[in-house]
Figure 1 (cartoon, rainbow, N blue to C red):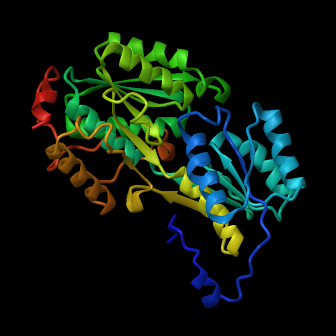
Figure 2 (cartoon, rainbow, N blue to C red):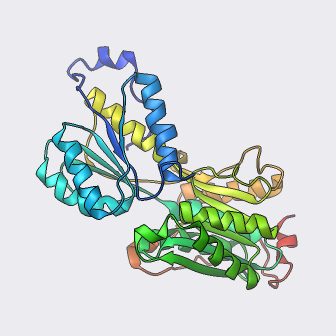
Length: 356
């Protein structure tokens, strides 16, 4: 089984003398949002690019195209110039990659958060429904109104995967919970870089009684968090640890290991162990999860942490199977049995019962 852990040590050279070091020219193509987006781009930069440069001394060439035409041209030029492996951030890069991967069969591509079956492409998908399930359970346990919300960036199955996981977790924890869902746009250019729209959608939900909102919208989500802070309510971040953006407002963040995935792609290409294929990474080995740090540890009781850990173990061991929206294009729910966080009380005030 593939593990996103550091496998390269000097000892490996002596154990595997047949693996020649490749002369790599690593590169990364960021998603449509800003590189410093407090989300996936920034995580790939800080935990992938910066770390790789620091530990190996090898520079990673960075590109941030805007729009489909520029993305295609950028990717082609990198391949022409001999860059490999090339890491692409975001599923919106699939269309360009489909063309360029065929044109340059000897170039290695690693696609984060998207899937393309090609002999020179590694596709890395994250079981975000598992991490979102835990944040949904947490939101249901902490909600005072019995109404929680989700704001997605793009109205596509990959984002519904977050919303569905969140709703499954909320309803598993408290069957009486109500979950509101909103989506910013139907095109990538408008979905992930519009904090004003994010704020508008969050305030609409707050007016309907939502007191905790989970956003999976990259830059658009920043508006969601700002709105929650302005209203004295709480929010849950996504994709990377965003707890520090608004301490006291951010209940937690659902993270996924995008930066580590990029780092591993470059590292394995360097030592000759990079392979293509589709990898699906989840709670097992901590590839997704919920973030607990100094910014939010005072917001979540030890008792609730223990209940969430029990749920995590049930998911990892297969006792709880979280439905993946992308497989069916609809959301199925798990009927609570033992281990549900909240009793089946009425909506209003049920959060106080769940926190004990």
